Structures are given as C-alpha cells and as structure tokens.
Amino acid sequence: MSSTPLAVTTPSRAGAAPPRNRVLWLSCVAHALHDGYTDMIYVLLPVWQAEFGLGYGALAVLRGLYGGTMAALQLPAGWVAQRIGSRATLALGTLLAALGYAAAGMTGSLAGLGLALALAGSGSSTQHPLASGAVARAYGRDARGPLGVYNFAGDLGKAALPAALALLITVAPWRHALWAMSALGVAVAVGLALFLPRVAVGGQASHGDAASAAPASPTGFRLLLVIGVLDTAVRMGLLTFLPFLLQAKGIPAPLLGVALALVFLGGAAGKFLCGWLGARLGVTGTVLATEGGSALGIVALLLCPLGL
Image (cartoon, rainbow, N blue to C red; front, side):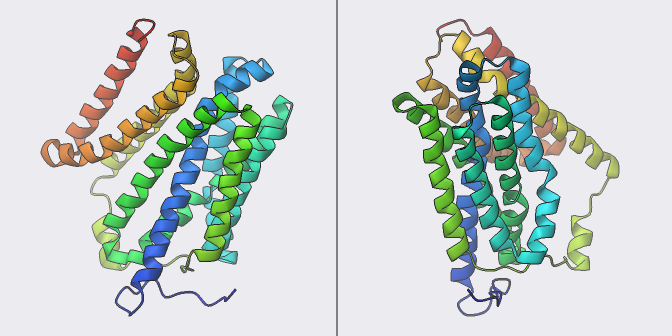
C-alpha cells in the first residue's frame, strides 16, 4: 500500500474528479453505517430490558455509554489520524465499532454489554471528524453540495439500519441479528481500507475564508449552542423511551423499527424544509418554528390513544 497521498485537494488536475468522488461516496457509506449503528440501540433497548431485567435508568446509562464515548473520543480520533492517516483511522474505527456490536451479541452480563457498547462508541468516534473533513478537503470551495449529500446519507443510515435490525429480530435471535450487522460493518471497514483515497489531514483555511466564516455575534453563537445542546438532550431522551411508549400503546415489536425509521426520515425531510424556511423566516424564526413544532409533536405523541 503506497504511502504517497493522493492529490484529491486539487480538483483542477486531470483525474482528480474520480478520487474525490470516491472520497464522497465512501464517506457517505461510512456515515450511513455509523449513524445507523448509533440509532440501532433504540431498537435493542426493549430487547435488553427483557433479556437482562433492566430498569429505565440502566437502559439510559447503556445509551449514554455509546453516545458519551463517541463524543468524548472525536478529538483524540483526529490526533490519531494525524499520526497514521485518516484512511487507516476511519477503517480501524469502523472495524472497532463492528467488533463492539459483535461483542454485545456475545455477552451475557450487563457489565459486558456496557463494555461492548463503549467499544463500539469509541470506534464510531472516528467517523464524523474524519469523513466530513475528508469530503471538505477533497472538494474545497465546492464542498457545500457534497457535504449536503454526506449529511443526507447519515439520515438514510438512521432510517435503514434500525428498521433492518427490527426485521431481523423477528426472524432470528437478537444476538444473531447483531452479528449480521457486525459483519456489515466489517465489510465497510475493509472497503474503506482498500478504496478510500488518502486525503491529507489538517490544513488551514485562508484568512479570507476564516474572516467570512467568523461568527458575527458571540452572543448569537452561544445562544445557538445552548439551543443545540437542549435540542440534542430532548431528542435523545425521547428516542430512548419512544420504543417503550409505543409498546405501551400496543405497537407490535416488528413495527418499532419502522416507527423509528419514520422518525429519522422525518428528520431528513426537515433538513430540506429548514433551508426553505430559513430563506423566508431567517435563522431565529426557523429555530423557533422547528423547536416549537418538535415540542407540539412530542405532546401529541404522548396524548395519542392506545392502538394508534
């Protein structure tokens, strides 16, 4: 395997388009897989509750182990990539996430399950900083459209993998279903290692780019940051307990994955709608409209009668 980086950061060169297209599509595959891995947990929580006799607090801790490990290790993942390359780091991280889920399917204890999820989360920590960065560097100033495709791929993974896992659980033991999903991750890791072009890690924007990207108001940035944190906390809390709420309302287990897929597809559609709203309502109006709509949707979900 050659150690010479591919010049994917210079789109004007002859032959640069195929490598950067490969960067985009393989990054999309990685994004779909890892986002799907992250949200498969919501399908598994009721299964683990029945298997291990867990309370809601323990289930929330399990969900937090994966997400917390993934978030905490994103910065160290960048440091590792600077030493061994983004391709190797992303491929190894994908393999680690797959092995973590395989271990979750083998464990017979709560402690083992927690360790397996932490292992999977540490592997998934490589995806967002490295794959999105690779797309941005490969396309340079033309990266906005490709990054939109990359983001949409994550939404597709969120919808597809939980639904697929829910269907597999109806025809096979949950452990076997997890091993099948783990095998998919191993295949993606091999594909990344073999076919993802090398993209130099790092690089700084020009002074003009930095100036144009600088926030106009530190107060506005802090406000949006707080809103983002609260939005994420509410969303994760809802999704953690949504399967149990749906079960209490009489939704059969095979449809739980479909219900979650509809939620994530709604999120993907909402991203397109936000672009249209933003052009008409502005940032503040769009945030108020979407957060208010989310709150109303949660209340409506709670008030829905049994059997619907």
